[in-house]
Amino acid sequence: MKEIEVKDKQQYLRKNHPFGRKLGLEERKKCIHCDLVFLAGDYKVFKDRNGDEYICCPNAPECEGTVIDWVDVEG
Ligand SMILES: [Zn+2]
Image (spheres, rainbow, N blue to C red):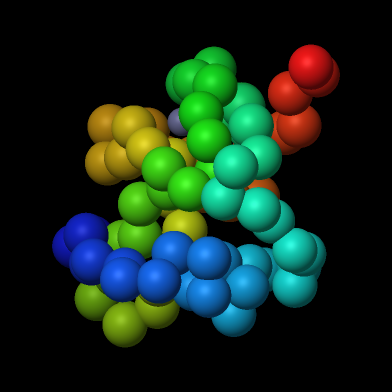
């Protein structure tokens, strides 16, 4: 997997969120893989050999969590 740079993170998220959910860059999320609490806008994008792109945990590639593994944080 190779990390790719995203210029407009909000637009990318809108276009590529797997459930088409509107996720704000300022929303706090928690990754269920590594327990990291972060702002959604800190996500990374990785591309695999097939050219598929994944919205990943800020701890990627050490963490395998992707956008579907993020849960809401209270408060
Ligand atoms: Zn993670």
